[in-house]
Image (tube, rainbow, N blue to C red; front, top):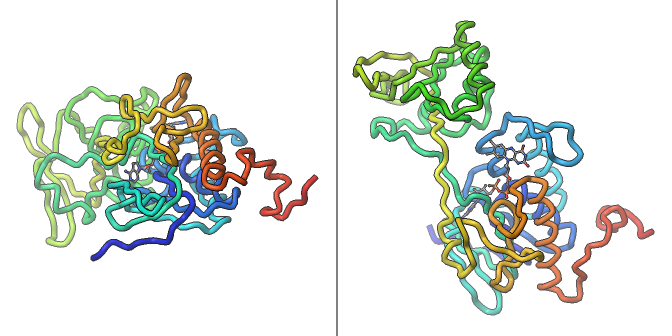
Length: 341
Ligand SMILES: Cc1cc2nc3c(=O)[nH]c(=O)nc-3n(C[C@H](O)[C@H](O)[C@H](O)COP(=O)(O)OP(=O)(O)OC[C@H]3O[C@@H](n4cnc5c(N)ncnc54)[C@H](O)[C@@H]3O)c2cc1C
């Protein structure tokens, strides 16, 4: 299918993590047309993909907030301005034509006057199971993104991995799933001690089983869907069959700066060097959030929000010099139905 060419917008924001979502809201508040593009199928960046069920305690205004609830709140805030969001599109190129940029993705072409890169740790995708027998069953019993935990309640679930995500999900689902099997290639875990203890308690209560020094050996199916797996003890080679509804490989993520590293930006250790105006050095291209570096940079959601505001205000002034950098106070803005003091 030929790539779709979209209408020109003032700003195109790469990355729908918390920084990019807040930038999309902020662009609307500044009266700029904007669009948000992300490689993942859902909003939220790391919060949705890596830790949706964890509480965050250091976002201003919340004593604590579940990562997935913060994503929903950001989505509500940004949707006020009804600006387009394009998910499942990896940004692969940047061109310049007729005095503006054209951002190229796997699905389309996005003409834009300026760009804000909020690409976090790059486009990341879950690390796949290394066993070739697993490949045909992704989407048919094997799933590496947990979007709706309740769909695993009452099910036989196998989680493969020994890191934070594997243990977080094992602890979350134990007692709700029919049974949770945690399969790991060694008996050394890279997970938080308290979560490992939670899973040990679930094992003692009969809600979970731990299969250490084991790996996936084979897959059983009814032809349509996976119905079980065989696991192999890596030392003795002994095999065991498990009846299974779902396999959740939690093997971490592979991230890639991809095309962004070819745009003539200064990149140090996969981070884009910016100045205090969030300028990258390439005129019209700004960056914010985890993808950036500068002296004193902190990779925190709170900092990403501030950087998003700076990047949008600077970009709007650069596109429309008659518009001030300083936005004024939202509490006085006509766009929200408020009157000037
Ligand atoms: C387990 C864990 C717990 C954390 N807890 C906290 C906490 O308590 N408090 C806190 O402040 N921070 C916490 N963090 C850090 C926080 O999640 C990050 O600082 C935050 O997610 C950065 O937001 P971002 O929008 O800059 O980037 P990200 O959240 O990484 O989002 C970037 C987005 O850009 C997209 N993208 C990248 N490249 C491309 C491309 N080429 N094409 C299309 N899309 C692309 C990615 O798919 C992704 O969705 C935690 C992180 C982890 C892993």
